[in-house]
Image 1 (cartoon, rainbow, N blue to C red):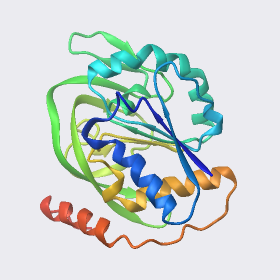
Image 2 (image 1 turned 90 degrees about the vertical axis):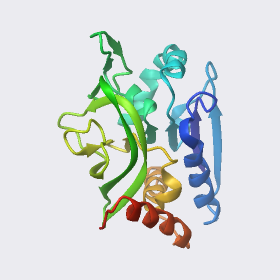
Image 3 (image 1 turned 180 degrees about the horizontal axis):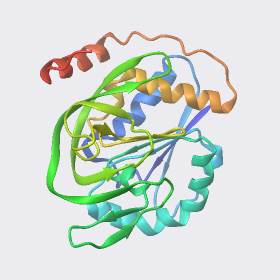
Length: 242
């Protein structure tokens, strides 16, 4: 049984981010893999050691401010499970919250959870539009597509980006990287939602969660023709070839 935790679903769900949960569930169900979703709201208790995939969606500054205290209370346990390899997908605001701080335009530093050593600073323009990145999986490189809309510029230092920007802005519009890949954490600015149009990435997360459980089962191939057409259509629109 795979258990997926959707943290703050009522607040962190910009641009259809909940679709990532639906995609993970369906791709498990289509393979006959038992799966359940725990939706955890503010103040609700959850034992993160008992879950296999954690999802943090995107939210506006207002929603992020609402959850800050509750999320800080969970930080020590989140740090333990992330360092222990918990598969985590964090989108946009959820991604930023994992870092050390967010610096505003007037120079104030708003502390993040400090779970991973990166930071975000406010930019003077929004980085918005459709985006394509190249991600290296174990056995191949894939083109991943999505939609970004953020003014924060994230800098990850010597950590590994999730992927290389092919078209769009990515973390900051400067260094050519998008997102963050740390242990089994996938942080990214890609909304859309991300996983329906990028089935290989979804399966990578499922596979990592099964491996962490100690399951050696190979994922049964699925008919992803529709998903791959959606991916290809966006790459064509962006004039990107792989």
